[in-house]
Length: 200
Image (cartoon, rainbow, N blue to C red; front, side, top):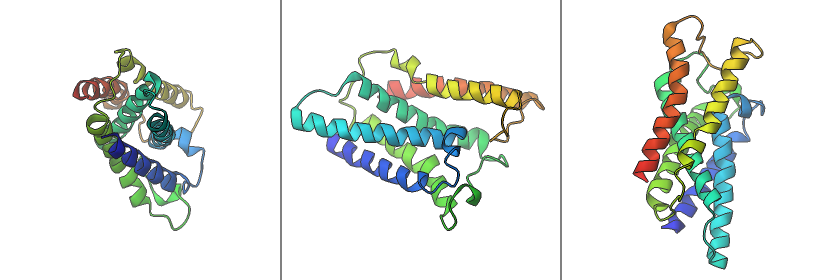
């Protein structure tokens, strides 16, 4: 089972590298939720691959910290898909477009990989092929939402203080609906982490 997980995580890393190295402004990796989550996914999957190799060679068990990181990765990527589909897809400034990438790179390919393929691969690997890797502490259900909530807290602060050019089309001051969106997005992280935890 873990052999399949190893292959899937290798595919995730390869896809992420292909997309992320073609981003025109590398600072966007930290500015946009999709790029940030996928960058973290690349790092965590790479670390997970290394740990799988080490455990295979030495017969030691996978550390709890690494198991937790895979949980964080999966929930983060699933959040990326759900938030994109439910809240951001229709926004003018939310779609990945050609301006984000080096000339000649297909932005539609990047959109499919970052918003659909990698999240699905991570979820399948975590829920099915990593089923025997058990997280011992329920605290991970709290820890897993912290990175995403911190991002959106910083997002709200920087946007409300006009400290940056808002990366998303969420001018939440103008409509009650947009305020609800800003509240619902962090709450969705908690729901997603709960669902993934219980499916696992």
